Structures are given as C-alpha cells and as structure tokens.
Amino acid sequence: MLRTHRRKSVLAAAALVATTMLLTACQGEDTEDGGKSAGATDSAAKGKSDDGGSGADTGPGSESQSGEKGSKSGMVSGKWVGTVSYLAPGKYTVTDANAAEQAFFTSEDTDIEGAGKICGDADGQAATPCTEEELEAAAKKGFGATVDVKDGVAVSIIEDHTDSGTGGGNGMGEGERSGLFSGTLGYMAPGKYSLSRDGNERAFFTAADTVINGAGWICGDAETVTPCTEEDLEAAAKKGSVAVAVQVEDGAAVTIDEEHN
Image (cartoon, rainbow, N blue to C red; front, side):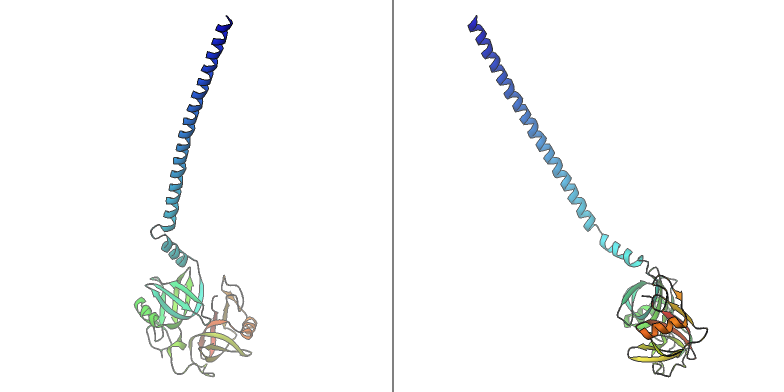
C-alpha cells in the first residue's frame, strides 16, 4: 500500500511539471507574438508620422503660398515716399531715404499719376493719369514717388515732381514752384522749412491752413494718420530724420504728410 501511494505521488508530480512547462511555453509564444504585433504597430505609426511630417514640410506650393499670403495680407498700410522699383507683374517696392524697403501690390483701382517719368509732362502743374504698363516700364528704371498703401495694395502712386528734373527746382530759394516734393524735413526759421534729398535742398513755407499729418514722428503713432500742430512740426524738424511729402503751391505748403514708418 505504501509503494502504491508513492507511485501516485510521483506520477502527480510529473504531471504538474509537464503542465507547468506547457503553460510557460504558451505564454512565451503569446508574448513573442504580442511583441511582434506591437513592434509592427509602432513601426507603422512611426512611418505614418514621418510621411505626414514630410508632406507638411514639402507639400506642393506650401512655402510660396505662405510667403504670398504674408506679403499681400500682411495688413501694411500707410504712406511711403521714395524710389519705386519693379519686382514682378503687379508687385513693386518703394525705398525711402534711409534705404528701408517696402513691398506693395497694385490693383485695377490703383491711381497712378505721372509727372514726366511714368507718363505725362514734367513741366505740367497737374499730374497725368498713367497705365499699369507705363508704371511697370518706369519702375524698371526707378523713379521717385509717394505711394499710399492700404492692406498691402497701393491706393495711389503719385510721381514726385522733384524727381522729374524740371528747371533746377532743387535749389534753395526756389520754393516758388508748385508741385509734390519729398525728402527729409529740416528746420530753417519759424514757419520756414527745408526738404533735403540726394544732396539737394528746397525751401518752403507753412501757412495757417497748412494740413500737417503725422504717423509717429511729427505726432501720433504708426498705426493711424494724426493731424499735427505747427509746434509738433517745428519740434520734429529740429530733431531731423523725418521723411515727408509736401504739396506746395506758390512756395507755401498745402499739405505735409509724414512718411509712414
């Protein structure tokens, strides 16, 4: 009886060992399969992420579209005085006396007025309406103008009379001429100022009804055009480095518009 009991114990122990080995083998297979599955999933996810990242960076036209949007809808607005140059069809730059460059677009509604270089007659008192084709041809050579921009698009491009080379109009004391002139504002005496440009200087006077518009330097801020006083103008002129466009009639300023910086 004792021998029979021992035999049963041995058989039970052997069966337990076999069962344990079988379970261990099964778990190993499950783990290995699970590891392979997880590895494949991770690899696929990584591949999808890499593909997606590559598409975002190098998608067709993504960079140029972003640049176009930034240039055209950058919401730049203001008035710039300087040299207009050609960039591409419908796209130009204006560079001021401090070599700061601003790009802008034109539209079908842009008012283009010439005074001898874009179109028209340099000796005429009134500016002449010009076409986009004439503007493009003149801009490829470069010309001086006042450019009024709204949301990146030019509302008007008015050629500067002083840039047309008429009658030596850059000399001091020759302020009797009428026209639109631009340059750096300087102070001479109460009610008397100068415009300096390319080494030349022109004098002009102010009157009680002269309209003075500031954009941060004469008065106001760069966000909006602000009406200024004669005292504001005089203080700014004494400091210097203020670029303006001045509409002159018979030597007296009708309007003084600060260049929008």
